[in-house]
Length: 386
Image (cartoon, rainbow, N blue to C red):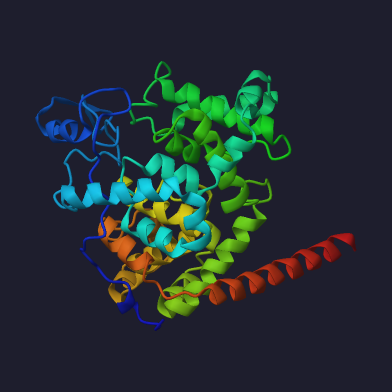
């Protein structure tokens, strides 16, 4: 890839996720219809936020994720139905496709998984189905255990903070908060040596919006222990390493942004910690997030790096944008609040899938940064032993 920012472009194309179809999870009216009615429904202003009396197509009543208007564009209904048929056929022969035709799986994930099959597709993609079939009674057994009191207390403090504007989690009497508590508690029982990390809560809540609790649990297990392996350890050493890998990749794809971040002393941990730990569930607009997760669960953690790179270049890729961020505070504020067009589905998906970073680039940076951290750790140990 060249070092200029011209490779990160705005794009409006046909690679869009299809509109949500069918009935909502609680058996209400078709969600497309509900979304189209939001504009005519009454709404209230609560603590500065517009709170609707009707959820949007994703279940949000307000807040940053609220999308009252249905999409203006999208593939025709015939295209959506055709994609659904292809996915159903592929899921019925899953092992064959993963072993013999993974390229087709990858291609279809990049186009966007139809909403009607997304929950099942995610369960299959991340390996949660295999774990669930291998341990059919484990989740219920974990729920019957008391659990570590410290972890239980921390979970209870956190569950009400997760997507409070979503219809599933808006109050204690909603099913989401109890399901979220169960999933997080079960994880700590199943993996007592790992325990609970706050960043797992939004990931688990996000999964619960799309699938039953037992499936969300096994997806969380797979994502935490495979995709984000060792991210949730107390030392956060792996997140620190991956932040340095991100910095190294940025130097390759866009030196001007790399130099700017170095100039203002913006260490990777200042801006990428939440991105990586929460797998962008607290960062991206909902339609964009769903598409990124379609690709993330198929292609792995490198998708998080590519997403981060596209955001960094989108925020700071021009001389004008860097001039507007002369210091650390301005730079971090821009990275924590990227322009809307940078996070749009069209822009982010187009550029993430076309970012020219090879597997070798990842491997080289991984080896380089792991070696650097090991040397620093040895120096620190030797210094403290004197």
